[in-house]
Structure formats: structure tokens, C-alpha cells
Length: 264
Image 1 (cartoon, rainbow, N blue to C red):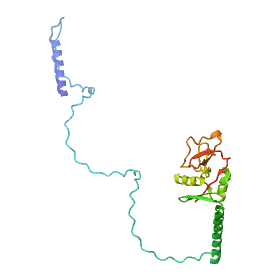
Image 2 (cartoon, rainbow, N blue to C red):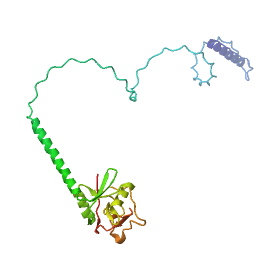
Image 3 (cartoon, helix red, strand yellow):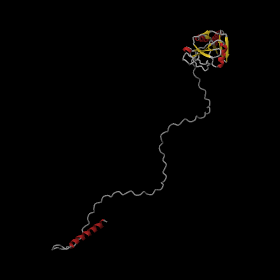
Image 4 (cartoon, rainbow, N blue to C red):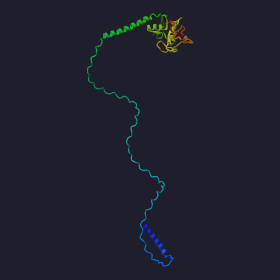
């Protein structure tokens, strides 16, 4: 292709030279020469600049589905968190009885114990002491002349007129405590002993005004106050009494009223 171009170029140059030689001269003494032979082919020209990258062509058609690849097992992942405890299984069958073990070494000799007679004597002494305590309590209770009962609780009095503190002491010495009815039935049993007088109850609010409790500091669950009571008249009515009609009233603890003790 390049050779043909060079031949064509040489031919054109020859024709041009020939045309110049055949023109009529403007002055004289011009000689017309004979055309020479074509010259040798010239050297190849330099490579042209690299052309710019063309635009992307339209997308091709979608290829067919490839063959299924081989399954490759990857490395094991990290251990997950521990799961919840499972349901407890059923108890297994009882195993066979094992062989009898070897006999152990003899133990240290213990301190000689008391004889059966000595233990019996100690037991009798304890029982005698308990009996003496019971007899003593009964002797103290024999001083109470009048009695009333409701359920497992007994009420007794000898109609002594004492202050609240002296009444608490009297009942304690007799292994009882100053009367404190826990329900309407016990309140009615006390009415039988009060009759025309008035008697102290174990109810008081010495610790905190308005919060009545028994002599052991327990809150009460049953009350039978007179209308308008307790009113803490003159600011010193911290104890309580029961009247013959079973109604309660608050009074000063320093006054003397009948003492009724309760026993269980």
C-alpha cells in the first residue's frame, strides 16, 4: 500500500516538472530537456499519533446460565452463645448395690456418760421444778375470787383497786397479764366481772399519742370505744378502762381502778 503511494507521488512530481519544462519561456535561449527516470522510493514516514479511545458499544446479549459450581465447605464459624438449660431428664434406674467397704479404724474413746439412773434423776429434778412453778402459779391465782371464761382465755379478779402500773405488776406475778379483750366475746366475759365498777384494760398509748397497743407493744385489732372517746382529756389520758356496759374510755394511768388479769 505504501509502495503504491510512493509510485503515485513520483508520477505526479514528474508530470509537474514536465509541465514546467513545456511552458513557453519569457525570454530566449531556453532548452527543453528530456524527462529523467523516476527517482528511488522515499523512506517510510513516521507513525501517526495514536487515535483516541472509541465510545463504549451497546451492551451485549445476556449470556446463558453457567454450570453449577462445586460446593466448597468453608471454615467453621465462631461458637455462638450458650443456650438455655434443657428440661431436667427423668431419674435413671437405681444402680446395683456396691461392695461392702473395708472396716474403718477404731474411733477415739469418748468421755464416760452418766448412768441411766443419773439421767433419770436429772429428768425428775426438772419435772419437780416445773411442778413447783405450776403450784406456785396456782397459789397466786387462788387469791382471785371471781372468774369468767371465754374460749381458752380465763379472766380473774379479787376487786383490788390499783393504778395501771401496779395492776400490770400484780398480774405478772400471777403469771398472767392485765386483761385485754381481743373480740366481742371476751369483752362480754369482762362485763360479768366489772358489774357496777370500772376496770383497767391493757390498752394504752404511752409510746405514741393516739396509737393504742397492749402491754407487750402489739397493735390492737378490736376496740369498743365510747362515742367521742378516746379524747385525751387534759392531755394525760394514756390508759383505758371498761365500764359495766362494756364500753371503753381513756383515763389517766395514775387513777385506781379494779384490776382484772387474764390467763391462757
